[in-house]
Image (cartoon, rainbow, N blue to C red; front, top):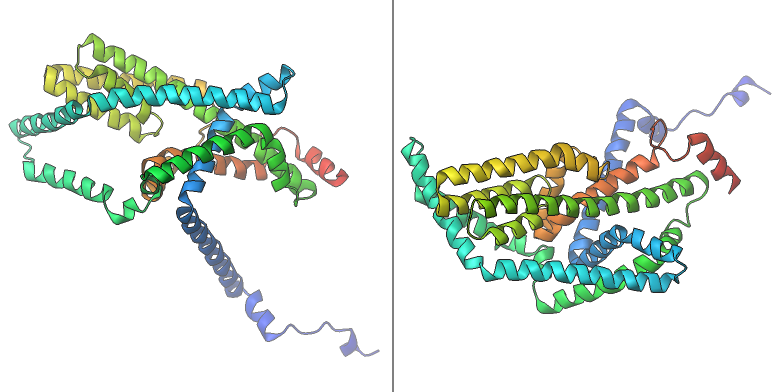
Length: 375
């Protein structure tokens, strides 16, 4: 046999084009284009089915938050269906109470609050003019008109919040949330096992870990955020009552609601409370209100968040701001509220899929591989 017969076949021209450095770079670019195109397609599909997507996300987040109650009832020897039903009734009762309190507090004094904010902006404009900072009423009005135009524009209105604005879609969304949440509470584990059934060996173990940690992160995020929001509203509301600022109850409720929007919510609530205090009590009280808001936010960020939230929201502030911006553009207020826990779960899933070398692994890599090869 000749040497030519033993020599390996020369690579084709196409193989040589894709095997050099530029070819590998081009392949990566094509992969990125495919991934981005898929992501854009998923976003558009989600916007087309916004009522369903939002209902499923809300139901999933609430189910994760109240999952410990289901486990507690199941340990008390209750059937899973009955435990899920009792938990669902508790969730609906809590939500109904909160929404009723928010609705009556804000709706009853919405006009007074709007007028107080408007008057506060006028007084702030005069104060700045008095110290040499000229801001004309036309500039303020232009900014307000810009925000109003954005909120009522087609691009914003085409988001998920506008999709839920009609009575029919809102009723459909509520019904979907109730039924989907019940099935998540009752069959959540079986649903996830069905979804990851195509995975085998180590991939299946990783997918199980993702499901377990994602439920923990979502539940801790919602429960922690609600606790922090309650503490913020109580302390800031107490300060407003002591200072005898009008609309104190409404402002406390507003603080509680905006606390579910990280970073931005606390700032917005503080500005609103300071403007109302400026109108009714003058600049000294307004500055005191600002000091109370700053103090409570510092206590929240340095004490409450680390202790209560733990690692549930281990995201960089820049990532949170980007997620908030994207969620607001795509889904309005609902998108802003859902965007941060969604980003947190995505990051948790990435860390759970690549766990090697991390101290918080539930099992070492060797154990995961052994369980995978044994299945």
